Image (tube, rainbow, N blue to C red; front, side, top):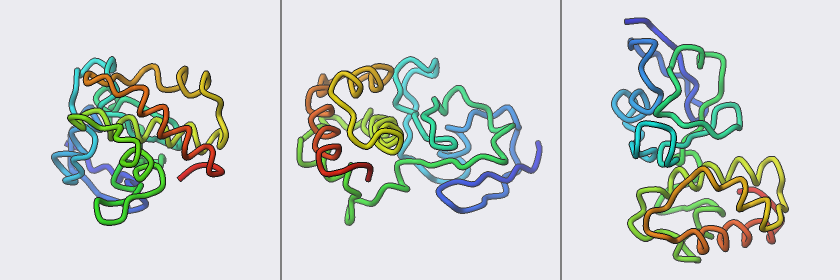
Length: 156
């Protein structure tokens, strides 16, 4: 075990953990942040996507070692059920969630895109979101939600 300090959603957390522990497990089991989900464990579905220094990463594959000087953001940083952020609100309005399992990862990947490129065209959105899968098939609604936020002038 090693004492690591992780900056998660703007708060520093000192964790006594195995440095090879995947970030997903530290977030869920150590910090109680359950937004990111375990999907495949192989970085193929995107359910575990979080932002590290504003870039989407698969937290199931990312070891905690090496993240001490990075900014980690989870879906919990975007808003809450009572006060959803603009991107979350757009997903709700577009009824982009069916089972909801993929949505946290989808939101974080979309957030990264909108922060980098506030007005992406549909082809850019599709290409950027391709690595996140929705088994319920709501991809078109997800794209609609992202386009709605992009049309409002940018990132959440």
